[in-house]
Length: 612
Ligand code: F6R
Image (cartoon, rainbow, N blue to C red; front, top):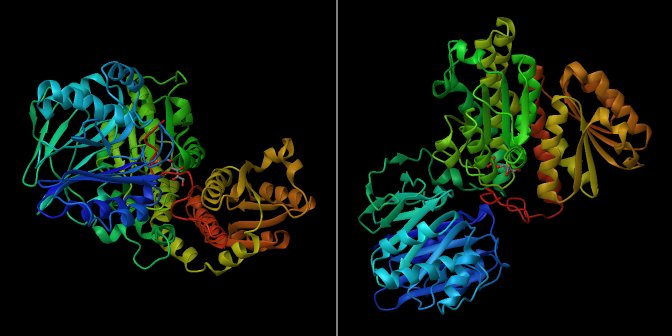
């Protein structure tokens, strides 16, 4: 989604802004722009539709804009089509204010009409230009930028992160946020604002997270933060615990491939600090046995792949905890009048920690007095800060739009939480607890074994990449895993794909199976392997080509029926999706590669979805 960077320092701002925008390219965008201010040339703005390279060419790598103060933006269109005019920064009519914005201003039309009646002229279709014009309107009244920003924030409704520069303020940029992330970066030769820490990590790891309603005034030497009443606020600094190399490709063709390979280490980092002396220890989420007993219902809320993690956990947790677990799409949950009460444990799962629907669903759950636990990857993100408890997945920065290592770390963290609760509730016996825990610790090695043998998957991708519709089938955990395999494939290769619970095929979908249809059959879940096999036979009988993913134990049996088989190491059945998903990620990757798709930045998709 949209990205913001701002810089106030002593060097030329434009190249720094362009580089920061390039580091946020992965988030998805359709146009980009920068505004820079200098003493001699005042405000200079360049913006254009298309890739950042176009902005780079337009500004000769930033050399055409002069000055040590500036803001930059990558836009993902919400109001008005992607074009040069609707791109940010937006300039006020008199040309002395430039503003970039992430989020949506809900009452922009009403404000726009008011300003038009006052004689203000608009050039774009955006909600953002309305804010730039309103700001100028108030600035003309009060002649103080800070006061004008305060007045604007009291007037607008919706979500926002703003970066603002004004030609009358040679040294300062102003930032404000509500429901859209904004980070302050304390650098050596200047200070920063950014919507994503990757934009500024090359310059500083010393950051502070802005809270809703706060306004920051950023100069080369200071960052002053104020609350909505313009009272100064002391910010707590955080040190980002990864460096620039973690957010770079490091010689790999794609971030997605690099991130698939990083999974064993990411999983190890997520698990190992939380297992001590043979027990799961969750410092950030400790509960007494009585508190656990008082939970009558568990909700897992998320979107996309994070929701698929919830699907796996539902099967596992209901079996281990003997409690009803409801998995909800955040976008549905928030408007469903949910039956959450003070006896509900509500788990929200989000890589970015900024997904608007997930955030809104969590707020609704809190309003209904549910106890919220967030499983989040991005430290300091909005969901992490608002939840009652947070457990971080230590996957490191995930740059590819299609999630892989974040999904895998979410899975194992949910396994740990399940074990922890099962122990408190007394529903998991000691032998099973020990068996799962020891297999969890063995997962990184077993994932490495899967990743060491990718040639067959490359071969299958080159054999099947031309199909235009692919079905994933499986039962129980294999079904949940198939949902993720199917999503991976469709989002990066653009092949139509659906995942079905195998037992449902004969209730309709089997009519689509005809000679040559590709079916990816998942048979890794031991307790239901025989049932899964009979579904494979069923689709084979109708002429389907079957690519199967199974375990070493079942390889031989599967090979007798399937056209192609990939086998992963055996583990405890509840953990099998952690291994089975890896060939599915690789299959999607290699199919997309064969089809020449833009793997890290698939069309129409954004890394973090901060609009509804
Ligand atoms: C798919 C993918 C998305 C995200 C979804 C939720 O590869 O990445 O489906 O899982 O947009 O995002 P988070 O986890 O950031 O809330």
